[in-house]
Image (cartoon, rainbow over the protein chains, first blue to last red):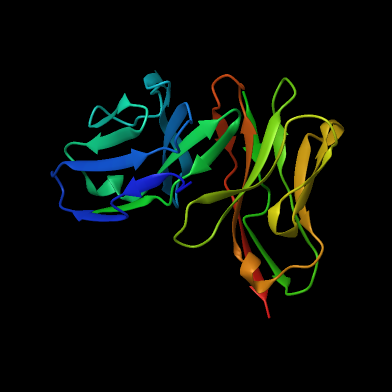
Length: 111
Length: 114
């Protein structure tokens, strides 16, 4: 299996622009998680889905952040408009039974 | 509330020396416990996990961890550290099995001296 796939791996954008991060979970996994990692706040859970349905989005910092999972093999995390404080590494993870498997992350820099 | 504490932010050990990384958790029921490792620029890789049964758990890369309920701890150990073990290590507790949600500690950065 290819593991969790994230794209792009690096994204540099300017403040105010829309950013879309993509994730393909491992086939057969029924849960998907989006995390944000920064030096100051560590690893934060933003939102997670079970069977494509959003279960808990309490970690989404603001209305500028939105996430979708239109099918079992694809999810997006969108930031609109982006701000410099959104600069971080964003991870996607998928889960089978009780174990999460992480993707390589997207490093986002907002100038 | 559930929480995970990794008391050591940075640890430096010499190559070949033994290693122990500490993890303490707060959780009302029997926890699901995990250790992940993150190499620079990489995602988190699962080292090992504890769900039930034998309290000494073996993982990949020669790591092991011991669950001690009386101390609310799940410390990670390795008898002989290799330079390639330099990375950041995260302990996590599973909140509820049917959600799969994890609470992560702040991480411990391991530096290995030659």
